[in-house]
Length: 165
Image 1 (tube, rainbow, N blue to C red):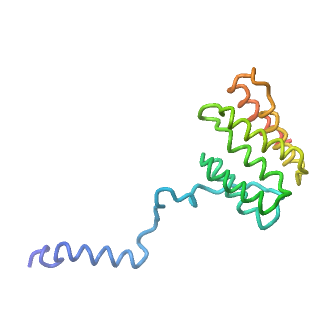
Image 2: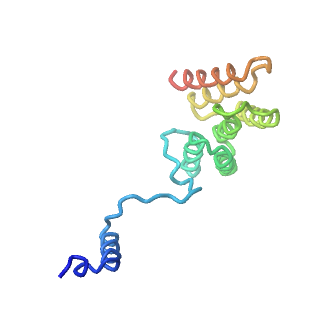
Image 3: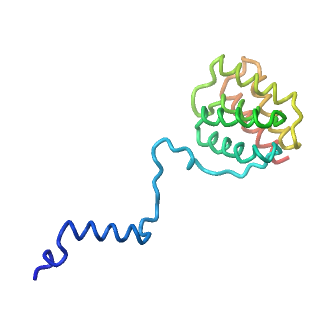
């Protein structure tokens, strides 16, 4: 009896693969293209309403994965669920800043500045949040004569310094 006869060729392989799959041999699940649920996780404490916190954190994960439009939608939902959450406005403003791409257009700057200005007049829940908002506000209110790379570098350093202060 040949080994080919014993195992039966293709039918044997189908049974083997099916059996291994049923036993849990497949250990990784590849997300479908466009599935943003696997964009990552972050630890970003925020004082928004408890019902909005998980969604806010999801927005930050998307923001840091460069999914700006989806992050903006989430931060806008957070702002609707918790109108007192200044960090939701910070998140919206952050989605208009694309540090590795081209500088924001004048319309994007206007939209980002509007959200940053709104965050500034709201009462941030913590000093840390106020520092994040203030750093972003400085970016959006820097004179146009400052080159975009300098403006972006100032934002990064300001957010870092204010977050650890």
